[in-house]
Length: 158
Length: 134
Image 1 (cartoon, chains in turn yellow, cyan):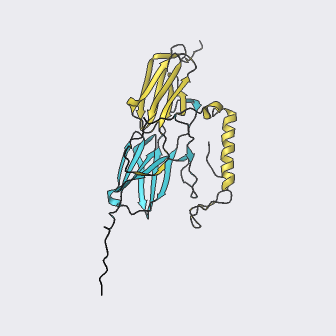
Image 2 (cartoon, one colour; image 1 turned 180 degrees about the vertical axis):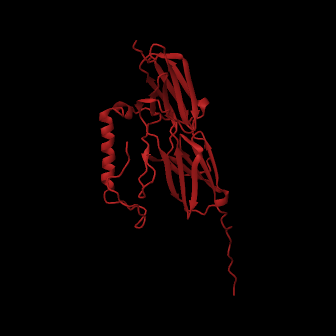
């Protein structure tokens, strides 16, 4: 998506930190409309956005694998449980706070803690033997190999 | 026993800054925990997908700025099947009310969480004032 503002107002901090250009609301509105356009054209999934189950997942595929990705900051790899059952992958675990000190005062607490479990069913034939998971900088990537039948192959014309 | 609640999905919050950014792309507000004890203020920020080299922390005039750049982690030849979250940079600013030892700020980044330790400047020792009879 091309990110541009509707009206090119110069960025200024003169007035105050909360100063917004007069068409700020319209920019927000435009963003919402873009989001709708994406939904309608299928670039975003309808149900997916509102699946309501933690963690949010992004799934991509290339010719050999499916890739399931989730942002799980603060999770240790050993605390995540990944199960493959038929075509369903379940990712579960618990996010904990490391802070148990009673002597501290909280100013903000926005980071969530708690249990989660999410199942996702993959379409197409998958190769259950060929599943890998890795955790890099708080992003979990599970790659699931496609079975030989499901792989697309190029057919040459004689 | 402490009760554990089920986690809820939160949509990532896009930054609404008055100043426009020069580079295209989405910018998100990282979720933070801030707490203090007697000696220091500790800030934890969720910045998944950022690598240690791409974080900048800046403290100027009592304003703490945290930015994190995200390099795309998907390969070019992958096509989307399901998209539930967007990927973008992180940006957040805080006004620090208390005096902080700037040189002693420590930062640590593990598993996508940035931990900033901001030591407070030692407070003046309370002093009892006695009144002398003239």
